[in-house]
Image (tube, rainbow, N blue to C red; front, side, top):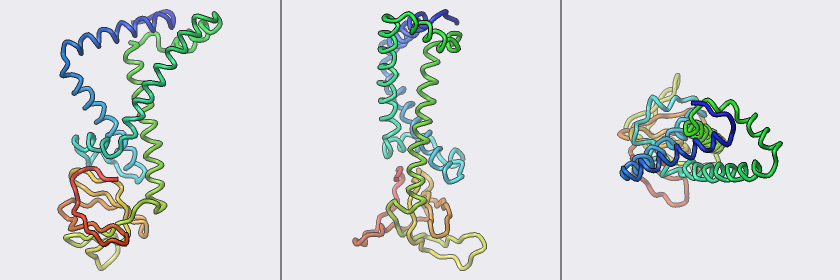
Length: 228
């Protein structure tokens, strides 16, 4: 599929969007599936980007359900998707207005958009959304990881069922003092011990209780949802 100018590109995009909306109207149940897929994608991008800041390949240790729960606990990537959608729509309307006013802008728009003319317009916009979502997830993950590494986040005391030790260090102990929660998935609790600069992956079965480092000594049982 190939077009010759930006105007044709927009026209083809409009036809693709109309066909897509018509198909969704015929199959309304797809709306829930699309929203679930979008939320899961946002959660996947955030968890992967966050654990990557601690040199951990999260894709080896997380499950499909964790993606959706992540976006509930950290909705900013999803909110960013809505913001990006409005931004792209605003750019589209501005581009149409400028093309109708100045001929030189039409030539500039055609030249700058020419590399995309041979691709499906709907695919181009989907890939653009994906790129900006991952870029934003990286920004949020870098900010959150920096806060954790600098000790700015809330600290916890974690009591374990069996001993946890660090490499070349004995004896092991059952209490982790002043650790911060990176993220909690359905199977593991990821912790950062700033004193030892270690990332700990604890199965939930090994976590007896979690006590926040505050004036109120309240012990909290670990939950299977995402916590950050």
